[in-house]
Image 1 (tube, rainbow, N blue to C red):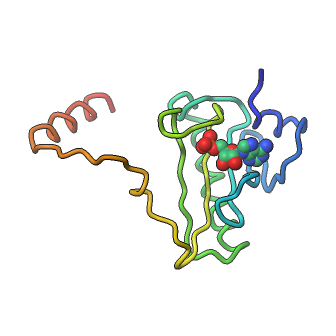
Image 2 (cartoon, protein in one colour; image 1 turned 45 degrees about the vertical axis):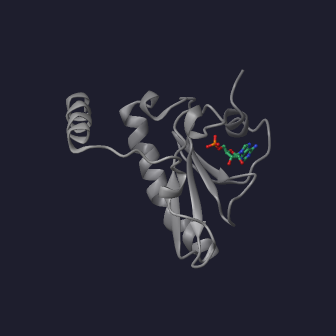
Length: 139
Ligand code: AMP
């Protein structure tokens, strides 16, 4: 069963496609958080960011880089929040990697990306050191 985004890419269901190339497609979100809310996806289905091959990741970023100013200019936004929900626990509903480009406006009542946090951890210095070392060893 293909994802809803694959169905859009294959023209099986309608969407407002605003850009496409050989590896990526951008279209308006059907339930926009702001006018111009756009999704950028790889044509091929990858569930999470780390499933995306490096060459496709490069193309994906290039399309995001292209679309951010296009979206901002089109709706006269002051800024954009650009984000991925990467995995179900992070709120990802469609298992097909997608970048949200959400136009932001002065006084729009929204929050920064920091607003996603629930209970913030209170981490001691040695715990931070351990976490940093662990991440560094895997990077
Ligand atoms: P996420 O929670 O990060 O998986 O976001 C999925 C996004 O896909 C939501 O913002 C939905 O509004 C959007 N969406 C779902 N179905 C469609 C569709 N048919 N066309 C465009 N956007 C869609």
